[in-house]
Length: 272
Image 1 (tube, rainbow, N blue to C red):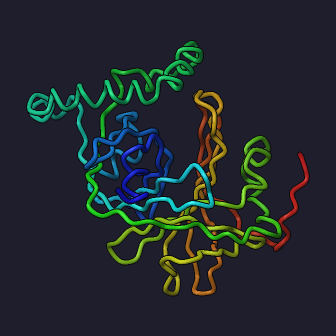
Image 2: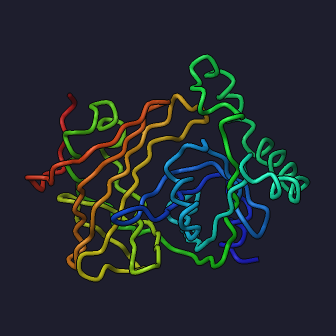
């Protein structure tokens, strides 16, 4: 069995890229693999659910435990199961039940974290407000992250909350999604001062390519420890990312808004 097949089969976490107005968006999600697809759950009111209802095509990145090893990029097609699809629920009830049980086992540490954070859990995160998503794996291929990570990262937009900036500042390895025509491409990248990107071996932008970047500091299995940033914008043919909008999350709180282009290439960020 290839290393990429092993990583895909053992995946418990991925980043899901999907199409929205103006280009791609992307979000980290817990998952479970059934061999031919990846299952995940989220709020039925989430932006990604609305986007995947409009266009089921998506792309996933499964990062390796060791950044020196290759991860897996997936082209997929999403199917959403919820109470608005009673026929689908009835026809696939045994499979859905098995997937839920397997996800519970695979994420038992995270479930324990949810129990600890239950008093703070928003209503939209409760089981009655959630949907199941299965992403069918249409194509999977290995991608190795760039290994050159010397220097400094970019100066993050000042519109981000100070706590979020502190949590993700210093991270050099990020996940990039680009939209080329009707195709979504997702791959690892290293960002540098001024949002210059090192893509290593992988897809390259063609002119002004709609793109987004996720930098995620969540590594512990508790929802209140989640911290990350999604930056949306475009990549030019000089491999420079130009952010124009940000989404950030910290625990159960999240927000979004436009960001100003950086005015300096310095990657040094002082604590607020």
